[in-house]
Amino acid sequence: MAVVKQMDQVASQIQKSFGKLPPEKLVVVCAPDLETFRTVTGRDWWHYSLIKSDTLSMQTPMTLYMRGLLQVAARREYSRWALGHFTNGKAPQWVVWGMAGYLGNERDVFRGQRKEYGKLTVRMELADVEKALASESDRIETRRAMYNAYLMVNELVEKNGMPSVAAFILALGEEGNADAAA
Image (cartoon, rainbow, N blue to C red; front, side, top):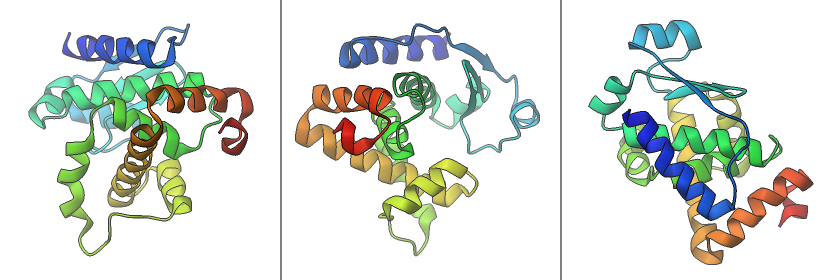
């Protein structure tokens, strides 16, 4: 129920910001334990979920809760799914992940993960952000890329407001090109 509650809350926020929700229904499957999550998705503990079409396979809610991530994970993953629908999969990875992190209130999680970067800086080149988010293969690089994506979207929202950013994201679904959508 905690997952449903968080997803309902972010769905309301998305409806308000974007003026709509995807017409499709999202099927959410929560693994009973981490080993089942790994077996079913092929993903390790640091991934919250796996999204395939309209099915979201999440880690066990209890594990996410114990790590202090349940609210963030449920909100971010629902947002990623919805944004994928709005953009018809045409948006740059940084836009989808950044807005999902923004809607998921993931800022403090990202800040807490900075100590894992070691000598690496927070900032990454855009091409490296896209590559890391597309592959999601290296934990540190993926986390740095997610943080960079969040920072970029946060800056866009601060400078232009959520209505403008939402309009840009919706235009990406029609245009398929960030320059044209802007």
